[in-house]
Length: 256
Image (tube, rainbow, N blue to C red):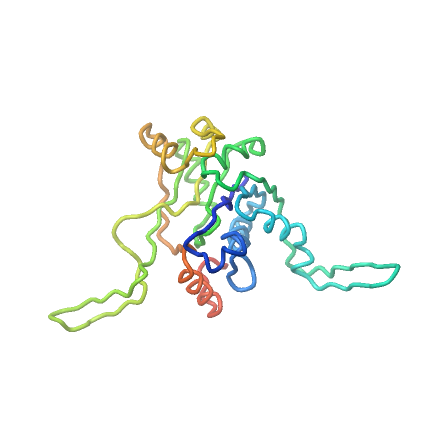
C-alpha cells in the first residue's frame, strides 16, 4: 500500500521558514518533518511513497536525489581521477519515492488526482506537516474491516495554552498544553479505496476536504479512526519551536 504525502503548500503561517524552503522541509532536529513522517510509516512496513510537490518542490527533489550524500560520511578524491565514496551507515532507508510536480497553486484534491497513475490499489494519504504516534498498521486494519471508501483519523490535539483547574479561586492543578478532551479534529492519516478518484479531478481548484470528503460523508462512505494518542501539526513558528523542543529533550512521541 503506497503512502501519498501532500507537500505542495506554501505554509504562509510559517513564513519565517517557508520563505526559503517548502513547509515539509522545515527541520525537527537535523531532519525535515517530511523525513520524520516517512520514517513513521516505514516503521510499520509502508515504504513506498508518492510525494505531491508544489511550492519549491525542487528542494525536495534535490534532497532525496542527494540523500546518501546528506546522510553519510563521504570521501572525496580530487584531481584527474576524481572519485566520491559514500560510507553507508546501518540506517539506510529502504524507501521507494516517486516525486510528482502537481503545481504551485493546486488545491489538495487535484494534487491527489494528478498522481492517480502511480496508484494501483488502496492507498494512504497524509499531510506533510503532521506527526503522531498513531499505529499505522491498526489504522489500515480498521479501514479494511469496515469496507467503506475512506477512513480519516480523528485526533484530540494539545491546546496552545496552559489549563488551570481551580476550586473557590485556588489553583488546584496547572497543566501546560493539555489535550483537548471534548471532540476530535481531522488529523490526516487517511486510507482510501481507489474509488476516491471518482470524487476528484485535475482542475487546480478541486479541493479535498471541501467537496470530496463532504460528499463521501453524505453517502456514508467515510469512517473515522479515533487515535487517542499524541498528534501535533507544524503550522506556525511556535509549533516548530515546540516540536524541536520535544526532540531535543528526547520526548518526541512520534519516534519509536
